[in-house]
Amino acid sequence: MKIEIDEISKAFGATAALTPVSLSIPSGALVALLGPSGSGKTTLLRILGGLEFPTSGRVLFDGQDATGLTVQQRRAGFVFQSYALFRHMTVFENIAYGLRARARAVRPPKAEITRRVTKLLELIQLPDIGARYPSQLSGGQRQRVALARALAIEPRMLLLDEPFGALDAKVRKELRQGLRDIHDETGLTTVFVTHDQEEAMELADLVVVMSGSQNGGRIEQIGRPADIRARPATDFVRNFIAA
Amino acid sequence: MSDLSHSSPAAPAARFRSPTDEAPLARWLLIAFVTVALAVLVFAPLIAVFVEALSKGWEAAWKSLISREALPAIKLTLTVAAIAVPLNAAFGIAAAWFITKFDFRGKAFLITLIDLPFSVSPVVAGLCIVLLFGANTAIGSWLVGNGFPIVFALPGIVLATVFVTFPFVARELIPVMIEQGRAEEEAALTLGASGWRTFLTVTLPNIRWALLYGVLLSNARAMGEFGAVAVVSGRRESATTMPLKIEMFYNEYQAAAAFSMAGLLAFLALLTLLLKTWLENRHAGELSANRRGH
Ligand SMILES: Nc1ncnc2c1ncn2[C@@H]1O[C@H](COP(=O)(O)OP(=O)(O)OP(=O)(O)O)[C@@H](O)[C@H]1O
Ligand SMILES: [Mg+2]
Image (cartoon, rainbow over all chains, first blue to last red; front, side, top):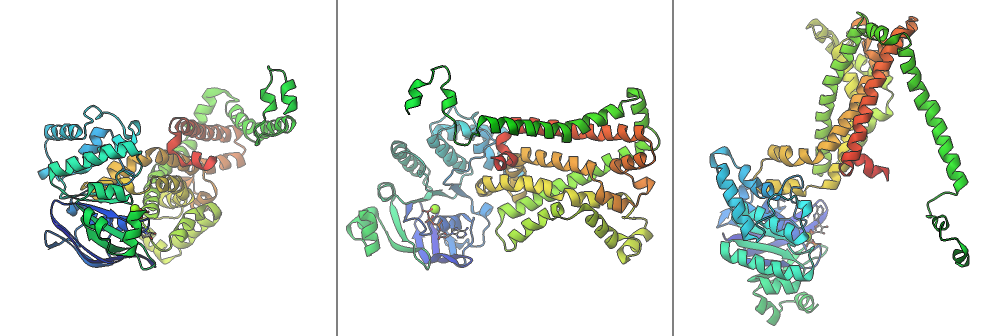
């Protein structure tokens, strides 16, 4: 699905989080929102997912105005920074949650839910952990379960907030490849937030460099990793990718 | 350092005193003081109540409890608790949910408001209800005219009890819900769950033990409330709860009846305490009381 962000701005009371930003994400792309802390990356991602509403501007999905869609209607697979797994449910129940929450008419039968959850557990290469609780998993395993849970609803897009933020370097590298594989396999338009420029450059098709200021976060440059490296558009980008 | 080397290996622990430890003498004095205070203020009266209650044997105590005078009071107290406690659980959940899951102006004010019943004398609360719903007010006389009196009747007692016990559930839930944040709820919403489903399947299971704890506290208080209920009941026989009845018995020199009922009330309170302790041991991590405690 193609995502367009049209002059979106966001203020929390007196704090400006985003100055009007515009961005067009082609269908099936893997996009990184890259920027320092406070540059509005999370805010932009949450606006896409319907968890936050913009102060002004529009969001378009496949050319249709989606600004007014509720979070449920957007059907975005969202992976939270802290994973936000349901702590009182097993891994299996976590992944099945979205399917079980569907209206009766479109809810898959029990056997079908079991089949799909099993398949997702295989996809994240953790086939045997269905009966465990989130507290019994490592950080990397939690991250993958959160991804599987988001994929279970057959989302229209995948939104990830610093998906590898809390993990050590080795696990990060592994999971990076895992995300790339899942993206290539599902073909989902995917947006992930990071402040690690190496991660953004290595993983994404398209990198959106953002900066923060008094007036809120703004977009400094949009481009393919190689182009951003070769031709930084502003001093900010030059400094940020050199760091 | 030098006297460390002289210390016998058998008693090295005494040498390393944690900085927050008191000197041994002070510690013993404190422990003795607390023990004596507890014995005099808590255990002695409790034991006295049960001894008095059972002074003429179990049978006499039981008979006085099921007497025509006592039984209605016991029933009324249980009825009031059975209505007021669920009401307050619902209010408490709603208030805590509102305060922790949304940002709005006047939040601090609302939190203060929830604590109001702790600072207002229960007698004042009772008087307010009489002033609002008494037979000489417009609302009150209309309600009485339609066969639904509030003051001197069950609804008034329930109102008074709800007011007095209002803070318990909300205050127990707010810290727990603040710590848990909104992320799990947001995750449920992005997975397509409705707000109501999110509440039932995510919020409620996460707060269940804290909720039960708050309900126990408010139940104990609901059954024991005297001041507010005394005002709204107007000392009518038909609107007399256990604490009021105990006082009546006592004033009428029916000491045995008074103490049997006091014993029953104390027993219910102890039962609550027992449940509460069990909860604290089993689900310590999920209760806010334990977080506040340290
Ligand atoms: N709920 C909120 N209420 C008030 N201000 C907020 C809120 N959420 C974000 N902000 C503000 O908006 C700005 C952008 O925040 P945002 O979380 O989008 O940044 P970020 O780029 O994700 O930063 P980080 O890398 O630290 O996660 C910040 O100045 C932040 O303080
Ligand atoms: Mg962020």
